[in-house]
Amino acid sequence: MSKVAKATIGLMMATIIAKVLGFGRELVLASSYGASMYSDAYLTAMNIPLVIFTIIGNTLGTVLIPMYFEVNSDLGEKKALKFTNNVFNIVIAICIVLAILGFIFTEQLVKVFAMGFEGQTLKIAIDFTRITIIGIVFTGLSYVMTAYLHIKNNFTVPGLISVPKNIIIIASIILSVKYNPYIMIWGTLIGISTEFLFQLPFAIKGGYKYQPYINIRDKYIKKMSWLIGPVLIGVAVNQINTMVDRTLASTLVEGSISALNYANKLNGFVMAMFITSISVVIYPMLSKLSSEDNKEKFTSSVVQSINSVILLVVPISIGAIVLSTPIVKFLFQRGEFDARATSMTAIALIMYSIGMVAFGLRDILGKVFYALKDTKTPMVNSAMAIIMNIVLNIILVKYLQLAGLALATSISVIVCIFLLFGSLKKKIGYFGEDKIIKTTIKSILSAVVMGIVTYFAYNMVSNLLGVGFIKEAVSLVVSVGIGAITYAILVTILKVDEVNIITSMMKKKLNKTA
Image (cartoon, rainbow, N blue to C red):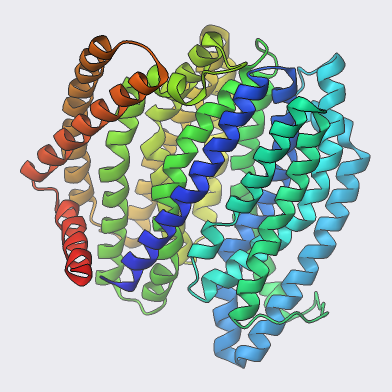
């Protein structure tokens, strides 16, 4: 098995562990507070610092890695480490300033992110946000450590950083129900800080050594600043997209923000497990092939990455649409999370699932353009997506309410994916589009048949077993298993190339362990 495959599988396994705990956190929150005033305020307080620094953090992750290798190539390992510490200290300074500004203008921030909040909900959201905004500093440092570990080919540890965080948050939510709701927000701040603290020992083991050094006039920092611009804008508009959805959701019935969040978490699990794992590992390889001008291997890697996403995510998308209500009911409906909350979340999940494949492809294609040292195209595409999403939000929310917000997001990202493919064609010419189209058609045909089989299988099994947590779990597992087998048989019959690659990887792994 290749190093890329091993790294991808390792990251996927780490992601599964982290996301299972992440789901546990959402389940505890849903069970404890349902779709209520406290859950809406908590999620808004979590989202504000996340949006603010994810914009900068994701940009750092994209630009810092190639810049580190450039400094290392030009000046050696010691200077590369010094450059990393320069970035580290600049990030600390920026984060402290952002935290102070956020603390001063908390009320204005909350009103921007949730303009429909008023009364007690607004007060709680402001209080919660003043606490979580401090976490920006730890979040910023965590992104730097993640980039450094990726440079050292350590993908598993960054994939596990949310494990201690979620354990602490789950404990704090449980305690908050018994004692005071504010316990969960203080626990969340402590949890956020562990993301950086968890990675630091592994970074030190990998060669990192802190130096109190700042030089904003460094030529590599200046070059990094030029590269950051378009990436920063591209990531920012994606976060604005989330902010717009939540802001409009705050004007709808109580619990709309929570329903969107829970549906988005289910969608995000698939994104993190498959797409992020693939894009994080393949990015350094694509960058290297691009610098070597190896067009044949570059194209081959692009096709395999895109087709792998299509092959894996298309059936999950169809499955999520078919089984939306039983999935949400099984995962969330308990305690304060009632049938109304299940219905709202299931509708949002269906609408998000329509664009699930497009979300995945956008991440992969973004990395392809960054590897080609083109940061402008993804930026322009992201700007077009947010404009389209805002327009569709305003139109669809009038007729479809909550469902309209999620559907607008899916439609805008689907349109922009086609535009990205067109831009890639203009930039490099042939990129294996014929192979991608064939795999897409075969995957969709197989997934549609799978969806029909899964639907009837679930109804048949659930009617036989009846209601109850264990019985519903068995019904879901059996129907999903039947659907997965159906899909696997169909894509094998239709001779989808990536199936052979995955099968070959599994055979090699089994032979080694035998």
